[in-house]
Structure formats: C-alpha cells, structure tokens
Image 1 (tube, chains in turn blue, green):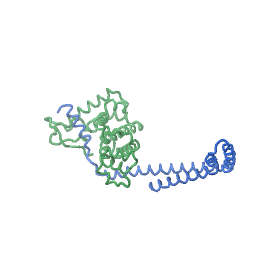
Image 2 (tube, chains in turn orange, cyan):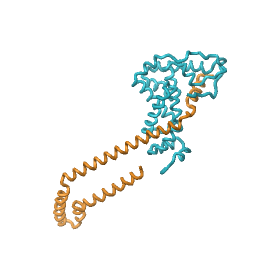
Image 3 (tube, rainbow over the protein chains, first blue to last red):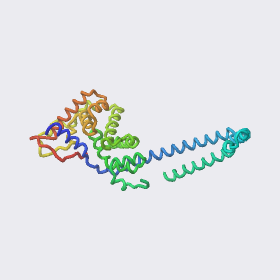
Image 4 (cartoon, each protein chain N blue to C red):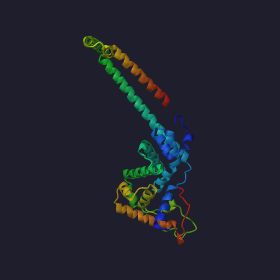
Length: 124
Length: 194
C-alpha cells in the first residue's frame, strides 16, 4: 500500500468512528447545558431591562418631568403663537411638543410593552 | 420552523441544521450533536484523553460551536469543523494543566511491534494508536483525525513545524507497521471501538 493510500485509509478510519452506546444520553446532556445557558441569558437580559426601566422611571420622576412638561407646553404655546403670525400650520408642532407629545410617547411605550410580552409568551 | 420537533430535523442535511441553529433553534443543534457527538468523543480519546475528560471537552467544544455557529460557512463538513474546535480545546486544557510537556516525554503504553506478525488478529486503529508515544499520537490524531495541517498542528501545540512533522512521520511508520502486519496484509473495515 502506497503512502498516499495509507494516509487516505487512516483519514477514513478516523472519520468513520462508530456511534457510542451512550450517544443519546450525551446529546441530552449537551442540550440541557444549552438550555441552562439560554435560560440564564434570558434572566440576565430581563433583569438588566428591569433595572434599566426602574432607573429610567426614577430619573424621570426625580427630574420633575411633569412640571417640565407643563412649562414646555406653555413655551410651545408661546412659540406656536409666534409662528402663527408667520404661518398658519403650526398646530402639529405645538401639539407634539406639549402634553400631546407625552401621550404619544406613552402610547409607544404601551405598544413596546405589548411586543415584549408577546415575545416572552413565545419564549416560555 | 416554528414549533419544530426533534424528529422534523432528522431528515435535514447538516448545512440546513446549521442554518436553523444559527437562528437560535436549539433542537436543530441537538440533532447535529446526536449525529456527530460520538465522532468528536472518539477523536479526543484517540488524542489521548480519558473517557470522562473526552466527554467534558466534547461538550465544551459543542457549546462553543453553537455560540460560533454563524462562523461555519459550510466550506468543510460540520463534524470536521467541530473536531478542530475540540482538538484545540483539548490542547488548551493540557497546556492549562501543564500536562502538554509531560505528555511529550511519556512513552507509549504498549511496546512497539509487540503484535507484529500477528496477521490473524487484525488490530484496530485504537489499539494501533496505543503503540505511539503521546506526542506522536497527538500529532497524528490532529492531522488525520481533526484535519489540521502540519503548520496548524505546530501552532496549536506550540512546537516547531519540523518537530511536528517528525512526530507525524514516526507515528505513521509505526501505524503502518502495526496495521499491515506480516506479509503486508491490509486491514479493511476494522474500526476503533473505544
């Protein structure tokens, strides 16, 4: 047998390893470890999201966001009146920068939460 | 493949399973493990790992493969790709535990040529590998089992290329002697049963 033939045969022998009797159990062990990793990752992402949400909400409250929004609404009204002298189409600017903008942001947050919930239901 | 079960993956090709696994489908990857897990464990045992250690490294290699599945381009076989990962992980483990240098100094378990001329009793690859020194066994297994080039094996083993080539050459000579005993009778169809 030539050297090349022998090397090919050796590669074939290495490649054609028979299935081990505990192959199924081994595969299940690997799957369990995969599942553990994914569960841990999901919890970590969830915990990070929750912590971020709590911090964000507390920062909003501590920054007196509602008072600022009212002040911004008044400012927007003043700007809107100024703009009204220049052009009549300033309603949208005024509405979005005032209290109406907050409602839009809230609605978007609710839609986002809906997406998150549906994703969670799909995962679990 | 929403709501896929293990059986629905059984008929798919490895490359298709890899695509599903890359999309986060763990059942698809489980099917790949079922198909190729034994070959990976065999390779590690042939490199010299004890059965429990081989299983640990094989598991780690498969988990690493799942994490890096998007890097698999389908240029070679999936099994070959994971075997290379497993071989490198085993070497890293040996290096971490400072066993690699001790490995190279060890002598083979069986005396060379102990079964020469025993043409009636065919010797399988696993038995033949035991006649090699640990370094020869590692180099031969990495090059012919994991499909690494001599250069890649030298890098992984942190050895000069010439040394790896010598180990491979000596290992092949011993295997050839061992596996084709008296009269040059070639062995066919006999495989390892670790």
